[in-house]
Every structure is written in C-alpha cells, then in structure tokens.
Length: 299
Image (cartoon, rainbow, N blue to C red; front, side, top):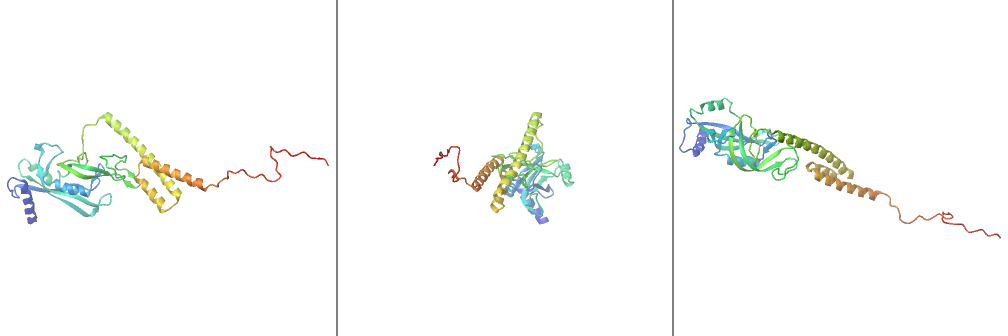
C-alpha cells in the first residue's frame, strides 16, 4: 500500500511546481463515467472510455459545472479504465468504467469539503466533454449528422433504443453535483439548463405526441410487411427479410411493401389459367342469331 501511495505521489507531483509530501495533500478516487446506459439514454463506447482516460489526466474539478476559477477544488493526476467481471450492463456487455485519482492541497478552506468527501456526502460527480458521433442503437444512424425518429428508452422489435457516444474530441472539466446524469451536448454531461419556456414546452409535447403516433403507425406497417414476407413461404430467405425490417424506417418499409405487393400480384397472375384469344368453335348443326336456314324444296 505504501509503495502504491509513493507511486501516486510521484505522478501527482508532475502537476505541481514543487514536490509535495503525503501530509500536504488529500488523495481520493472517483468514477468519472462508464459504459452503462444513463438517465438520458446515453452510454460511452469502449473507444470513448479509452480516449477519455487519456484526456482527463490533469483536468480540474469544480462544482456544478460552473466554470469559474474560484470553483476549482481538485485535479486528476491518474486515470484507468477498469472492468468489473461480475457485472453486466443493460445491453449484456461487461461493465467498464473510468476510474480517476484526484488530489487537493490540504488547507483551512477545504477542510470541511475533505470531511464531506470522507463521510460520503460529496460523492457524485459528472463530466463535461465533447464527442463526434452519437449512434442510435436501433438503426445505426449518427444523430449528429442524420437524426432518426427512434426515441431513447423505447423498444423497437425487441431492440432497446439508446445512444452510444463515440469519437471523443475534447474534455472540459468534472464536477461535484447533486444528481449526475451524463448528458451529452456536443456532449456536455450534466442536468439542468435554462428555465422552461411555455411555448417551447408546448411544441415539445406536440412533437413528442406526433412522434409516438408515427411510431405506432410505423410498427403497424412493419407487421404488415412481415406478413407479406411470409407470403412467399416460411423459409430462410423470408425469415431474413422479415428480420431486416427491425432496422427500417417508415419510408423504407413503404418501399419494401410496394415491392412485395408487386411480386405477389405477379405471382398470382402467373398461377391463373390462361384463356385463349381464338373464338370457340361452334358445335355442328347449331344455329346462331345471324344464320337463316335455307328454304325447303318440295319434291
């Protein structure tokens, strides 16, 4: 333990203007983020965690994401991505998290904060960072470039919708907060924001209701298309085609339905008996409306 503490102290002193002794500083560990789906339906990819590990070394800690110098209270000097072999995420992946070692210089001004950390009062943290990709778990669309209509938290064809945050481009800070959320903006992870605008809130609710209705209609359309897939037979091709509808939006489902209907109509037309265009031959000795029998001759 003492050897490990000495190693941490050497890393810590690379961020100070002079070497500090263990009695002058307060060391503590924290979990910055993980690959679990958070309150906002987001999670970090393994690649994102690895990039965050490199970028968070040397980053300052503040309170409530308030970027003022007077709010600076700690600094990270070491990070490591850890895997918990006994825990799985909601998606069945091995649980991984970014662990950090941070320090504060012991002063009269932060004595109460240190006691609160030791007592577990100041415990939750949240990070602020930026990512280049936000990938939908249902259709694979990058929500930053081509937003899809899938709603995080809903299930589509057995697939839970959430966003994977990937391609980290920058980190800003980490904060002590009351309720951590890991929310992305660009991607800034925090809760809260501007006061509610009644008009915007009304529009947001109307948009959400419309989206829910569209989702229901799309799901009904998907069921119709799946039934059409099996009109061609209960085989591997039909099953593969039916399974592919899980990742299709309404437009793609409409095109597939039209294609299937065209194929079914063509198949049904081929199975009907063909009628000849030639007129049917009249039976011998029959008369028609346009035939007049010859006059009889007397012997």
